[in-house]
Amino acid sequence: MAGDELTEARDALALGKFGRALGHAWDAAADAATTGDEETLEAIEALAAQIEGKDARRLAAYCSACISDLRAGITYESPLRKLFKRQ
Image (cartoon, rainbow, N blue to C red; front, side, top):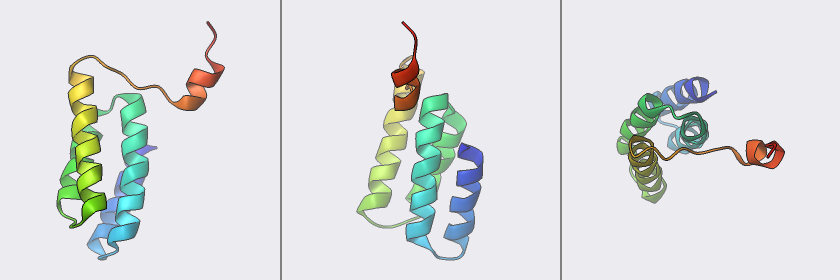
């Protein structure tokens, strides 16, 4: 779940484990995007802003794009859900 991953990311960030924090944050962002959790995406974007480097900037940009899409009514669906979706 996005919330659990976000908590893990925050904990890792507090310990100075930036790579680990980004890993958990990416997992949280993917979950939040597929569930339309704008609040979590905003929190992840803020977390990414606290970390230097290209990967952190990419994560912040991803979150920003997802937030913009959600506000525009664009939703994301997990690949697994798409695969098993009945038409």
